[in-house]
Length: 189
Image (tube, rainbow, N blue to C red; front, side, top):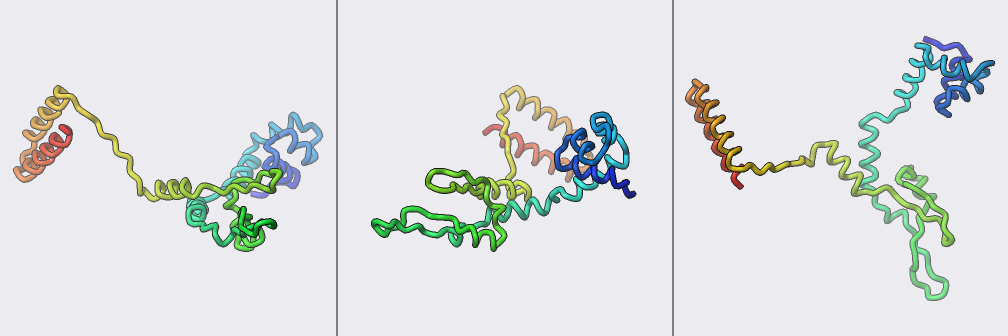
């Protein structure tokens, strides 16, 4: 479904500023305060906003690819030594911006802060990225150990024996009792 030009302009402006009044004003509506909030209730406008947001949102595979690049980066090739004029030794490293940009890796930069010594460049944390990728792939399972007091352990054992008594197939009953015994043994320690 195609939006009229004015509504399409409103949607485009709204997605830039997230202010319905301002978007309506920039789209050329005569009463932006009233019309802006009203436009957001129109099915076609809301649908177009939703469609554009879904279109521009990162998909899960892109998120994982980006995190993977954060976790894999070796900054060595992008660091140039700065030689001290007085003693000739390396006294700091400078990021080779041109090489980083040419390789399409500027997304690895978290922040750039000007200082009196030059720009301080902070990169995204590789270890944190690796942790998130590992969680996404189910590499890390959280285990919770629960210590049981004697009355609770005894109650569980009785419930297990009652359940075992309900199993009519001897092979299944034996397997169940074996697993119950292992579980009770593990809860002791």
